[in-house]
Length: 450
Image (cartoon, rainbow, N blue to C red; front, side, top):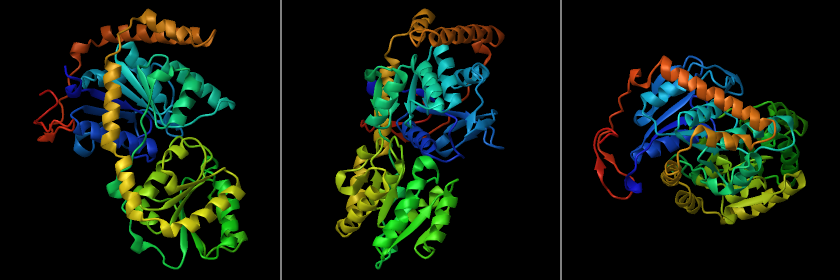
């Protein structure tokens, strides 16, 4: 079959999906929509969110399985190793899935689904959305879990070259199996509006979760100094979190109530209306694999000041961002430099540049190529897979092999207990007059089977 015309049936798996909101959730949704526009079938599997359980349909017939598995910590489901196998197997067989795509290293459901899919002989791809350390207890355990999962995937995707290096060092996955595909933004949602800006002040916008990792403590030091040096500067802070109290205390201590506006949590639908009020966007993250927030700000025409961490330096052209080390004095100097540059910034030129650099159709096309590579890899038997797991460590390797062997035995039991031919096939959502997105201009009618 011609590679350009190959159609995949993809199962996206992650603990993080709507109605929860974040970068991973947006990535999965927009990527799924664009893959569907290119003629692929996409199904999402995640855990239940409150009363949202069972099967739901979203835009353009995107089917979502909200597995009745309750989260127990930071929206991740409780690890069971084998407890999710029956339902993952049922979804794969019902939807005639050909490839499983897991997202986010912190997702328990993602790791388990990839293991089960590999046991069943399906090809898998993993996308890492975050950076992790190497020294603290949590990172050490997470990195070992990631090494276990990536020992048997066909390919991995990272959102920046810094993220690729981080994933390679943490998992020991060969670099040639890791692809770099950046995030994107729906530029139609983030249009500049210079008329919403103040003409007498320089407004600096901050939209972030107010937590330690996002540098909220750094803001406590930077904001009073900037306000002292530049009387024409005003801050708008959107977001919520445990560090919000520190920012409010700072505002009270330095009597900045009229210069620092605290909005609290901002719905994603309202983010643009906040961004267009500003001239400068300030990002103080201490670690970041990509940072979609500065991309949204650039689409709205804001000059960015950001900490020089992780994959941030890869996101924007140098003329649209001022980088500084995550030190208060350096950040203040970067803000001062940005204030001088603001008059020279054309918001619409910046928006048009972002539209050409980052688009979800481009991300989908590049992800599609990764799927092609994964599907072309050779099939392996259990012994070949166990060899790779055994290489993960003197003790850990043997433990990983034991887990995979038990998973294989459980699969054989499920094959006997509920044969595949007894599982009903789910009908595909009918999409009429789909315009093929591979450049051929061909119109495909009806379902994916045609």
